[in-house]
Amino acid sequence: MVVLPPLRHRPAGGLRRLLLPCVWILLVAGCATPQAPADRAYSGRFSAVATQGERRESVSGRFSLEVRGARQTIDLATPLGTTMARIEVGPDGARATGPQMQEVRGDNPDALTEQLLGWRLPVSGLSDWIEGRPAPARFARVERSGDRPTLIEQDGWIVTLADYFDGTRRPRRMVLERAASPPAPAVVLRLVMDDPAG
Image (cartoon, rainbow, N blue to C red; front, top):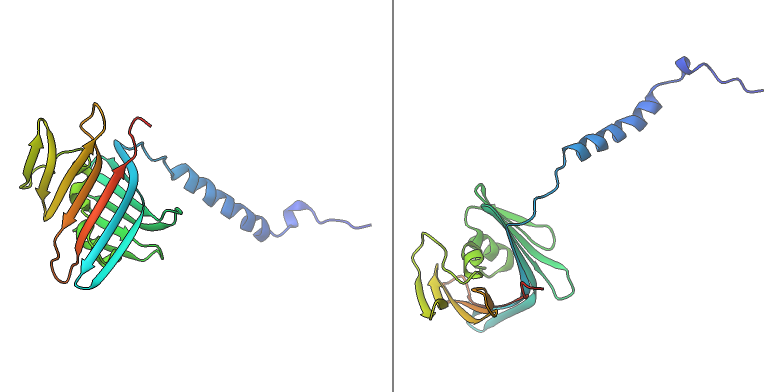
């Protein structure tokens, strides 16, 4: 017959090792707060061509843009859904993350995308241009057809708003062009937005 020692004589280390991770998980779960829904959200398809001299690089896939107050997040993915880049912008600066989780940080989100991808994305103006308007508080040249802008020239980009969703001020298709500025290549970015009505 096997007699177990009284509970008070059991070593406490094993139980403590079991309980500590459980307590840690509960604390982390209790501190985590669900992310608030985006104030504005957009998605669609993109294709980009970067040209410098004889060198030409092209890429295409899906994009999403979420705006929450002063913060915005842009995700780029391949047609198969593999993440190419994530760019996060807020009052405290910008962070861009690549497919191998390489990360760059700084104040200028457009310049960060150039470091990460080799070509520049118009991060600082995109959340306004995608609404069919120039970014506020910065010089812009705007051409209109009636009450809708057809072209916005701002921050070194020429944004052609080729088509709008019916009954809205939201562009359906956009072409964004930036001339070469060595060592940065020329970029042509085409966006086709998903229908906001679903």
